[in-house]
Length: 136
Image 1 (cartoon, rainbow, N blue to C red):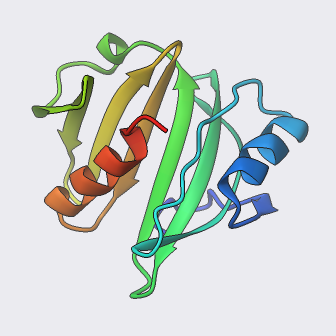
Image 2 (spheres, rainbow, N blue to C red):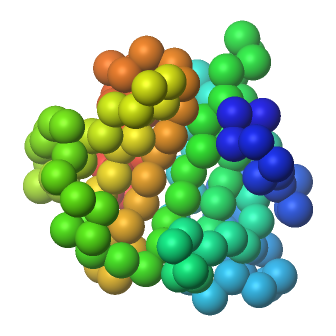
């Protein structure tokens, strides 16, 4: 999996049920997880930490076996440093960070920063993050 040793502790393709289960097994943040079907299938998730802060992580896989990681953690976008690009999405500001092999798209929802991360082409990652960040 793209995220190295970070793997789901809970397997579920039901976004709402997975969010509840992640909290039930110890996460102190309640993530808003969305389905990205038909492009990516939700595999599962787990409680996690980001820079020592409580977080939730969830995992997607495409039919072509590309992986993507979703994260929600307590922070402010400003904590992440300057982005490589900024995109607007229906009132939501998406901060795009491009690393050597990964694109990381982050946005703020209340006290949580959400991140969508993958090694697939950047514009595809941004499009999937836009779907995730869209108000439900």
